[in-house]
Structures are given as structure tokens and as C-alpha cells.
Length: 177
Image (cartoon, rainbow, N blue to C red; front, side):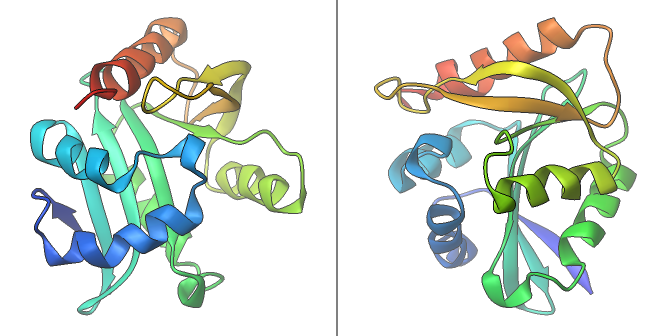
């Protein structure tokens, strides 16, 4: 059975186990460094940084933000040994069941087979491209941002406001934590 286990403190053993996946699955421009991640987990109560667990074994990670009017899925990744087994699909089905309402995420524009598969994966799981004109801010305020697409499970009337809230609450307010 696949479950999520929320990581609330930097000394949680599961965090230590999933940080290598976090660093392998996302390039530096698309993630926080480990120290910043630990501080954000501890200080931001609306961030749900979860280990995806099968039995007692961590198989991946799911990070999302509860931004009141919507949810922002920041990261979803599985360890290589668990990919291709429909675990990600089951996680997204559970996300849809538990996080009722608007769910947004960022995805790399398709530039190679891997990024094309990622967009197609989210489309198969009920998401669609909402905007192709988006620049993800830097996590640390030092690097350049990177172009991304916003995908969502529905088209919110307040999309521009929601995107601004993601940029402010997920990136800008956490640059120097």
C-alpha cells in the first residue's frame, strides 16, 4: 500500500532518505539546497513535504503547498527502482481525492523525450497546460529563473492571481530562510 508521510522537522529520518532523490530528480535551479529545504520544512506550516512510502520503505517524495484557494504541487519524484510501476499515477489519484479543488504545478517545457513524457504523464492524469508563458523564480534569489509551464486540473478564473501567489509565497518569501 502506498501512503504519504509528512516530514515536519529537519531531523526526520525520512528526510535524510529522500534528500538524495530530491537532489537527483531536480536540477539546482528547480529546487532548494538541502539546508534551505530543512529550514522551510520547519518554518512553513503550509508546506507539506511528504515521503511516499510503500510498507516501511520510502519510494519517492511529494511536496505541495496549501495556498488556501488552491494547492500547488511543487515536487513529485520516485526513486528509479520504483518508476514505471504506476506508483506516480496512484499518488496523483490520491492527491485528487485528498486535495479537493484547484491543483497547479510547474513543468519543464518539452525539449527532449524525458520532458515530453513528463507533460504527457500529467495530461494522462487529468492536468492540462494553462500557460506556456511563465518564468519560475529562483529558489535562492541568486540564480536566474527558468522557463516553465503551469499545468492544472482545471482553469481557475483567478489564474494570474494564483501564479503571483505561488511566486510570492513559495519562492520570494522563502529565499533567505
